[in-house]
Image (tube, rainbow, N blue to C red; front, side, top):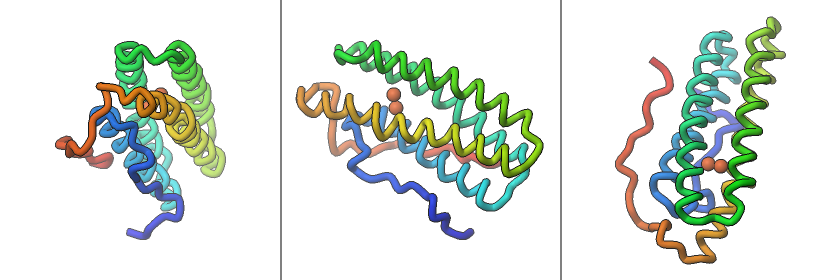
Amino acid sequence: MKQSEWEIKWNDSLSVGVTEIDEEHQQFVGRVNDLNQAIVECEDKPVVERLLDLMLMEATHHFWHEQQLLAKWKYPHRAAHAAKHAQLTAQFERVMKEFEQADVSFTWALKGLHIKQLLVDHLLHEDMKYRDFLRKQKHPGRDSGKQSTRKRAPARA
Ligand SMILES: [Fe+2]
Ligand SMILES: [Fe+2]
């Protein structure tokens, strides 16, 4: 298995300091790497589609979970954050349709990468804003040093 130069490595700077969210973000990073690898290795469209479906299904649950916690923590920008999630969800639906309709592998591969990049950007820019909020608050929602017990489910059968 060759190493992709697109591979994302999880590191502590991505941690929001909340174990249950970090676990979901780590799982997402794993999905991104699976998707990148499938595209780099020129896997067939159904393989890439299955990875995208899985990523989007988990993202939908993750958005909901994150919004529950942001409300619990009284994050002042929670409404704007939820609006970003809704905007992303609408974008996914649109781009997934384009993905499904694309026949040329170069075109659908680009659509798949676009969806993935929207999610990566959200993690790097929007989620890091509430991480900074929690840090400043020394918020009780934050924890540290706990080891994750959940293993990432395999993306491929
Ligand atoms: Fe997130
Ligand atoms: Fe988010």
